[in-house]
Amino acid sequence: MAKRSTNTEIAIEVAKASETIADALQYDASTNKLGVDLKTFHETIAPEIANEFLAVLTNKIVVQRVYDPLAGWNNPYEVFRREMSMMGDAEELLSVGEVDAENYTTTSSLTSTSTPDVKVAYIQTTHKKVWTTSVSMDLLRGAFVQEFGLADLVSLIIKKLRDSKELFLYDTIVEELKEGITIESVITEITGSGDAENSRKAYEEILALAHKFQIPSADYNESGLRAITPKGSGILILNASYQASFDVNVLASLFNSAKVGQEQFFKAVLVVDLGAEESQVLGFLLDEDKYIYKDRINTTTSFFDPSNLITTTRLFNFVKTGVNPHVNGVKLVNELTPA
Image 1 (tube, rainbow, N blue to C red):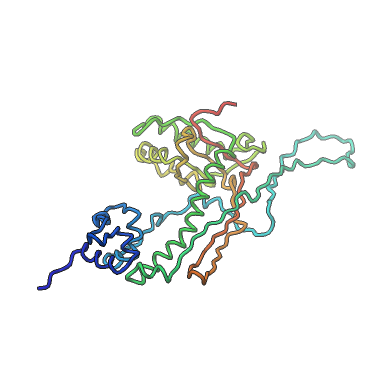
Image 2: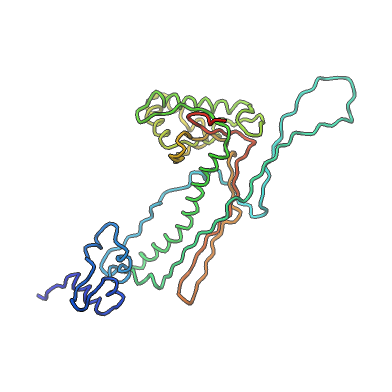
């Protein structure tokens, strides 16, 4: 039976025939040895040299699988997205204050006028972003042994443009809510896992706030208008730790949890990471129109460069964002921010 060559022996022979591989593997012709230990290619995180080697030799001897680390993830703030409007930049948000009553009198006042209290706010294009990626199908084919593997990778590369856009919006909206929602409501702090008592207090306080939103009040919007948010139409945004505490320490322990469940009071409950640097922010209770974002430009373009066989794809996204001061919305905090 003929002797089977080792991977090292194969690599040495290939290095003899290719200067590129010889440089990548640090091949020394005088000693006929490699300067790179091939065991490094079995590490979870391969060294930089492995990436060069991957498209030349490793692709011929390994099974390739393509993984999407964001598979199944959707931007939770999609509930605030409104229909796209490509015309115009700024958009007006209009509302009207209530009219004061007057005492009836028989005196004629036909020529007098009363100007309505019209509240005006604006949202405009606040972010103009572009994401770019370049690939060459012709060059990448050399790194694959099966066509579907190449197609999967290229599809994932293009998908990452959209993923990157949604991740940008996810991070941006968190910060804009923190800055734009100025009215605060103190909610009991949950000190750690198993803090059932404070979990129940916090949950009760949030539900009480949702009930108050149903009563005409000027306390919960920046325009000072008497407004309501009907039961079941508000958006509750919670830090992940709070939602977990409610699930375990509150809802799971109640026999009638269906009657006090979150779906009874809110249109949506979003569980997000609000950031450790502002741990006093527990979440937000918002009218569904409190935050608005709209795509003004959301388009993908690409061009092929025949000088290098590379196709470059760009995703352009101009977004209008803003907080609507005319409707209810509060920031849930552990303690009020000093004035």
